[in-house]
Amino acid sequence: MLFSLIIPVYNRPEEINELLMSLTTLDYEDNFEIVIVEDGSTLKCDTIVKDFSDKLSISYYYKENSGPGDSRNFGMRKANGDYFIIFDSDCIIPKKYLSEVFLSLNYDYVDCFGGPDRALDSFLDIQKAINFAMTSFLTTGGIRGGSEKIDKFQPRSFNMGLSKKAFESSNGFGNIHPGEDPDLTIRLWKLDFKTKLIPKAYVYHKRRIDWDKFSIQVNKFGKVRPILNSWHPQYNKLTYYFPSLFMIGFAVAIVLLIFTYDILLQLYFFYFLIIFLVSSIQNRSLKIGVLSIKAVWKQFYGYGLGFMESFLKIIILKRKPQVAFPDLFFKKTI
Image 1 (cartoon, rainbow, N blue to C red):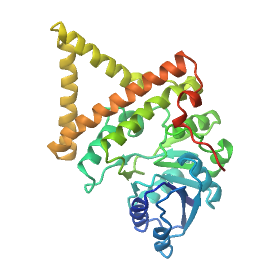
Image 2 (spheres, helix red, strand yellow):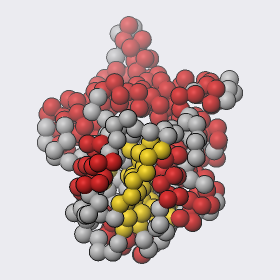
Image 3 (tube, helix red, strand yellow):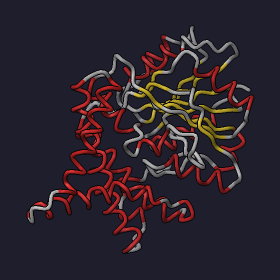
Image 4 (cartoon, helix red, strand yellow):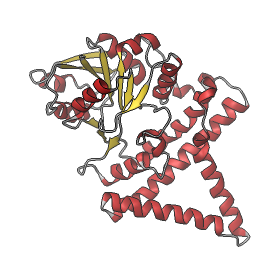
């Protein structure tokens, strides 16, 4: 099979440089192509792409801004491969990535797969803390990308594979963002396509390096989930409510403290102590352990409040998602 690597980018030329540099080190022996889609950037990466043209089979397209999902669809339409692999621009790809994907698909072929993410030692401490919050089994990260025990794995578009057949059958990503990747996965399931996790197909995902941007991001994740639940009610899960229940429980714990009942608050303290210890050991850093407490709090707080707001507007008040949250939807241009 011919792999086409689809990479949308928006105003991040320095990330593209790191990503492409990592792709030059892959040990995969067969041919593969790279499709860079510049999504209306003002800081273009065309000159950087040109610098790699003699090292990689690479094509570059510039288009009007229409969001990452639409840009990935654009790239897949332009690609020549029969299997597409989608990366975010802030990923660094390990040497054995494509070889592991090839082996896994040859052994157990599926039309859509996803892989986990990790943090490099060179990442900033805040990046490592956010990575812990987004991937740990102690947080919502355990749902996102680390366990084969999950009945149906939902790939995430920072590290996702999709066959040409599945793309053409599903018409690819929708115009919601974030949330376009689980939406696509569920639509693929409804079309009887299978998905799976390839544990060894991990990438190094740099994520956000700013607390405010991270908070905005997880808040949007929370807002998106009730929308997806309304579109695909049969795939609604109790685990999606956990961050909101976590925040409600914390508010109750504070109220109970007024009446000198502190057992519930002690449980929260114990939970964050575990976060600190596990992250400190995992990252071999007490500082990252402390930062992980902040990252996990922001994750639950942002996601939980976003979920509750969206649940009220979408599920209770029955408002149309595009009207209730217009900032979550891009207009398609292609």
